[in-house]
Amino acid sequence: MDGTANSGEERAVLHYVAAARPVQQLISETLTQVAGFALLLMTSRRRAALAEGALAGARDAATRAAEEVRALAVPEVAAHHHHHLRGAAETLLHACVAALESRRIDASEQNDALVRALRASSDHLRATARLLPGFELVDFGQACCAAHAPQRLLEEVT
Amino acid sequence: MADYSIWVLEYAAVEKFPFSVMMYGPQHQGTRKLPYAYALLKGKGETILIDTGYDHVAYGEQLATAYGVSNYHGPREVLAECGVKPEDVTSIFITHAHFDHMGAMHLFPNAKFYVQKSELDKWVWALTLGPEYRFLTGGGDPADIVRAVEAAKEGRMICIDGDQADVLPGIDVHLAADTHTYGSMYVTIRNDGARDGEDKWIFAGDLIYTYDNLTGLDQDAPQIVPIGLAVGSQHNLIFSSVEMLKSVGGEVRRVIPVHEDRLRTTFPSRLTDKGLQVVEIALAKGEKSWVA
Image: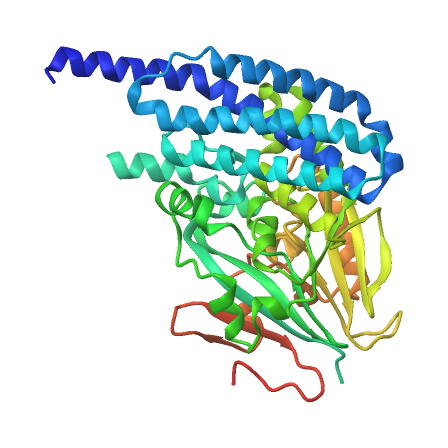
């Protein structure tokens, strides 16, 4: 592969990363909201009823995320990453459907489906964080361990 | 004689941590070691942890390379220093939902978890605000909420709404709302079982990082100086610190900050062969010392 082709490939990956990162963040945030709803559902059905509006919003966000994942231009080297991003979005949609069903009936079967879908989405999301840089799921910028990082990194490069 | 044996167990550390984050204000005053640790309690038929540590598999490498967190050891190795296995742990109090306090729930398969309702509710709410508000959710991991759901489904997740006495015998929890996080809580161990007894220990979570938060740096003019990292207010951090101090009759050493390196010189301690500190706060009747 010559320098130009290599640059082209790198550019394609950079474009993919730039386009996929916001979608991954949307999936991550929506996953947390649906998981939060599930937590309410399993610890206090009364409180869960108050959060039904948020669940409807989460379903819309999950649908949007799934569409945006499908629309991504995927270079070959990012195919594995995209597979997991798609998996995270699709299983998140399953989780939304299961959450909507679970609020109607007190069925442990539905709760099983909800938990399975949340777990699958979370695992896919973790894989996206592992496979390419720039997709970290935890913002350590506000964590106590990270306050010194900019100075530390500066020291390392100078 | 104490009802509970209590240890603080280091599981990782940042060797050079800026003091100005541990305590609001003192810029350019160097660094200190910041240990990562959790507390282990044994007594009344229970084996209890206060906080879980973080998920090393998920982001240990990132923490090591970008943030200088070193010498991580998992709970199987760390708890073994006191003769305990992760499977033995029956209850875990989660002081707040940051990755280093709640990130390893999956490593304790038999434990019940206690967390403040508002900590989870408001964190999930904050995520609806959009990415420009991400400061409010920093340090949290979506996977931890999924694990909380799994624990809830198994009946092992208990959401507490505010202060609650005797969550376990002689152990009370207190909400410190809108401080370091939305629903931070601190844990009081009344180790003589008495309501107003003298043998109380408080585990402060990250409401304080160091004893200096409770005393200030000027011995002649003590003051409360809050930590340098909060989504809530310094006002609330100061008043929760005063509340904790009052509860132990002003005896600073009884309000335990697990990130305080000087615990090892304040209490009996030993350094393990892995370079981790084991700090022994109290011993219940019949329990042997693990630092002697």
